[in-house]
Image (cartoon, rainbow, N blue to C red):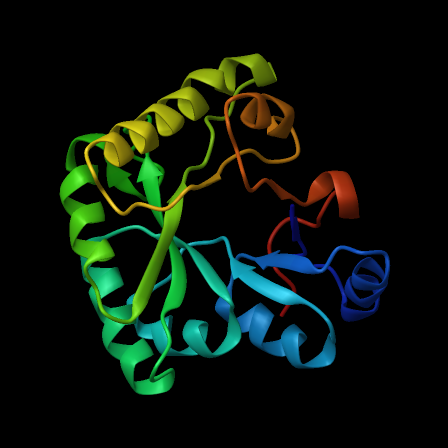
Length: 203
């Protein structure tokens, strides 16, 4: 479980780590940069969109980037990881826009095989699997087709010999149980752990 700690103050994040929530997720590079040095014993996942101009800072701050939403971003991360982390491969997930939703980032299902093949071949990245954001629905059950389709895509890629990795990051506070039923290996839970957030981000 990735405990999504966006907008949560450092004291509460430390308390969460002390309680055993040691894998934390942040949506923004800048917020994680400020928190990570002040919280011992945690690893950090980027679970929000990554602008290419913040790629270097993301590699320096996070242990995993779950939101690689294009081959161009992957190639930039690969180049920078070669400079910053020589001799090791940085773990990433490819974000998939399962529902072809114009409001969401991610690789289209029709392009996924080619992108995964290219990302898996990059020297300095370790492709651990796929990630998606479920559709906004009133009933959690209605998110099931998105999660089912991501699992099916992952299975299809692996059957075809793709080195996609086994991870499926899908499901959040409202629908993580459905995501787990459909094969999620990572769920990104914030509100159920930390409560409602203020709208927007603190300065």
